[in-house]
Length: 190
Image (cartoon, rainbow, N blue to C red):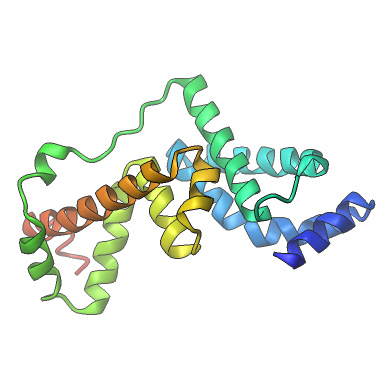
């Protein structure tokens, strides 16, 4: 975090080359957030560039009350949601009626029968089927090690809603893994 602030200060002092450090560090996660919301890699690439331009122009408004990563991910999230609303694109989530037919215990039991490589493939398949908020919250929490409070700042959701979304998404993931195994949707890959 201190290194981020150091580079922010360098950029604000006129060293525009220092901004490339921040872009390099955060471009993958910014792209991941945006592509999951937009559902289109080309649009996500364009919007990612727009986000980094907006961040650059707005560096002077960064108040340092949160981590720089929280601030930039919040901007990416908001820009992607705004673009989605403008084009009135509806992102489809999981079909709850399919998922609700399976119990957590049955899913857990079946998962333990798979090798770790097969579990990883299955996890990647499941992650791609999550609704945008669930995917982003799971990714920020588990892959980026953000706290519930930080995720709340990024998404604009209350901390309790973040916790509920984490819980529900984990449950959906577990049941969806079982559904995918049961229906042999990824049997060739496994």
